[in-house]
Image 1: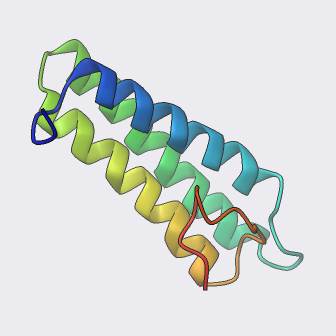
Image 2: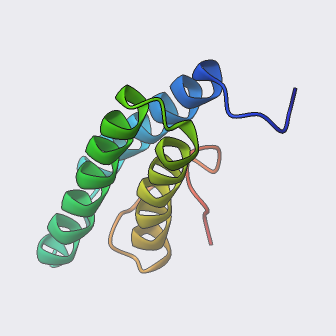
Length: 93
């Protein structure tokens, strides 16, 4: 069902966010390293939170943490901190 948070959905979204994080780390714009570091730290923290929640069987908070993580990456793209072109992984201007 579309309206259920399943282990498969969590895995898919987590993998997508990890791919986006890797791409963002490789595309920091010059002069934006400090801002990028802050965003990357937040993304990594939220991904760690998602693992914690998943282990506890709390799929709702796990899924929320993954989406918060990805939101930070999208914000970094929109604020011209990361130079990426992949509109499937990021919200591009």
